[in-house]
Image 1: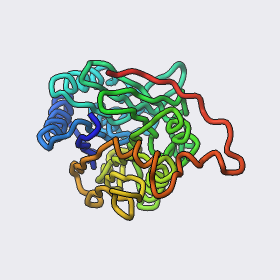
Image 2: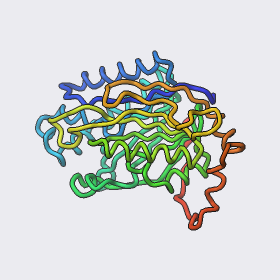
Image 3: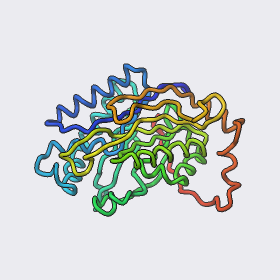
Image 4: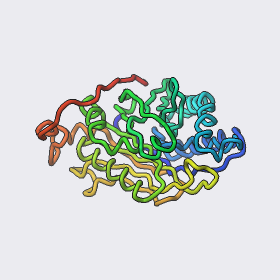
Length: 297
């Protein structure tokens, strides 16, 4: 399958009262994506932080919320795995803090209908994450072989560093997923411009999915701004500005877009420009991150 529909979430952070509320919300969102024809549903960075509301003792505590949300990881993953298999859809789960050795990392998980799951940790942390929240970067950088195509993940700030996506492109990436969480339009635009730049450089499709809305009870994700977007290189057969689809700013919604990954191979072979091929001609183009490839088929 090269042509399929993507659903990118503009996901609202809500003050839930129980695990059943979360499970019901997630199930309804995924079912809506399937009803819209999606083969892949993309949730945002830190969308799982709404689970902090289930522990009133720590929900208002920046550090304490890490442990309380991380404790839900097995249940969260089991629910996503069940939904992916039952509904026959690939799901990029909202990233969440996970305890890794003696620290917390920001982890995204890609669930396939096959029952397999791939994991990508955020590599480069923002100032807020490293200076106030004390979440650590981790790796390795990965690619995921799926029945849809070859997928990479750059979590939010990672999309602003071109050598990460470039390493994935050189390993064959066709589609880059960028889950994001930004508390200002400055932040949203930084990630969006990074996503569009990665689509241009790599001659591939890039999907951004943000958190939206206000959650005053949470010191971690209290303000959320952004719009989902599906981007491609501005070249033959695609929009002149590279914007395949764009959501309504700050609205809670799915953004649906159909893409054809055969376009990636076509443009890399015979585009109006050949950015992906000509990367090495830049002065200073050199060593890239090692890539681990995970088969989710």
